[in-house]
Image (tube, rainbow, N blue to C red):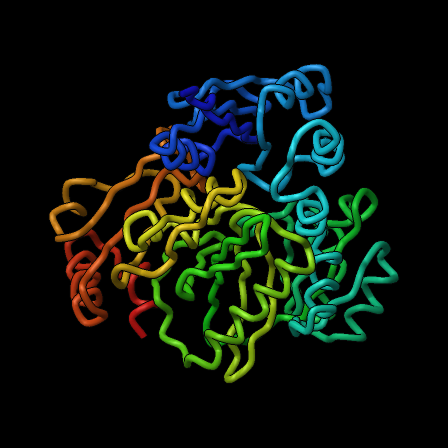
Length: 381
């Protein structure tokens, strides 16, 4: 009996998400090839890395020929590169999904098309259009680059129309390249995300809804399941399913939503595994990373049920004391092998518990022991 050759996945981008995909895929017998613009990436200790430009089609074509499927570690890989690769190998998620998520205007327009409400928004390409957009939707508002903005980058908050000159001075140059979008500021009760997976056959499975807390535009902490009414949970799942079907999506993705009273508003999507789903590594039957591998290789999807309530701490800039954190029962540590640097994601940790009351107790213990009050407090209300 012949044993089939192991599948090879090519990951475009070599950061922590690629690292965790490799860790999840190795027990399945999957081989990996990572491509990045730099060789010194945190996935490098776990998989071979080819350092090249995204327009180096000779090198990319050679790697595509060796892979059963190509996927993404982050969404800023040029969509043109993904389209070219799709003519030579299977790319998942597909280039259209990637391109849509790369453009905030296209993303918000799609949300509205599938029936997901959003904050009011206007496209902005000139100073005059910014003035008109402010007149249309008012202030406070947020001016954002349509492309290449994440973790709070490429944004300027306008408290009043008088801030227009400063906002244009800060972001006017990107407008000439890719355009801007002005969005009204949403006074939301909480932010939640749907982490979901869809395979080639259309099987769609969400993990429990996750509540998120951001600091400076970067995810600081998340908790799951989110304490919101079941009607909102089911509505969030329905929106995510429609989005996945509209994009013919294959793999794991995140849909970030604002909760405002009994209403959900679409914020943004990520066409990849996502920070807010890191808790699934320790708190779910099947993690987002394993299910992404399963989906893009057309393997049966795993169970997305939570095995217990969980909270995830995102470590930004530098790692705290691991021993102090791990002294709490059912806690789990994930370092990314990155050098400390302000604003850099260097690791995360998960706290699990048999029920919500015990989870809250463990979080409060950690807050006292490690001075994590600023992280914990917003999610204990």
